[in-house]
Amino acid sequence: MRPPGWTWGGDWSDLLVQRVNLRPLFTQVVLNNNSFNLGRYSIDNTNAPVPLPAPLHAAFYVNRTGLGLHSHTGDLQVLQVVGDLTTDTANRVYSSLPSYVYEQNLWRGRLFMGLPPPRRAGQDLQAAYEIFMSGPPNVYKVGGVNQSSVTWSMYVFMSNYVVWADSGFAAAKKPAVATAQSSMASQLLTYCNKKASANWREG
Image (cartoon, rainbow, N blue to C red; front, side, top):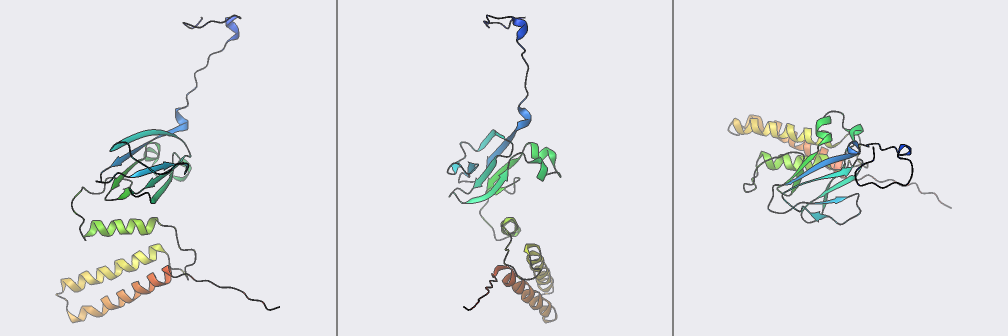
């Protein structure tokens, strides 16, 4: 049967019309802005970071597209491969519809908190932790120190400090705090310092 509006000078039986579903080749990405400043984004590093066109922006991108999430000043915070299910097997639903939120000048994978004035509390500490853990590892580190061991040493220090504070800062609890603090400082110094070596040969 001839499709309405089509003209064809040959035999209609020579034509084969097939419907092709291209939807699996694309992934919808949702970008939310929950900050006074508009977060920015870039695609495949081919364009300068542009502000979100609206507080809620949704668009379809070809799978394996490199989505850059930038701060409102343009600094790259996250580089995400869109629709890369091979690297995300834990949550297929999230992979098929990734959503990000720009909040308190940080990109997150979920709504973190509202817009109260910044507080030096647990929320701020978690934000710092997320930035530290999401950064590239220091390949020049010495020994077995890594991002996880550094954060664990911080947890041990803070746990001992809480015990000390709950005791009314009893003198008997202070040595454990000092020991944990020294261990944390040593871990951090070891991880952050670069170790370089060179082989020299005369002649």
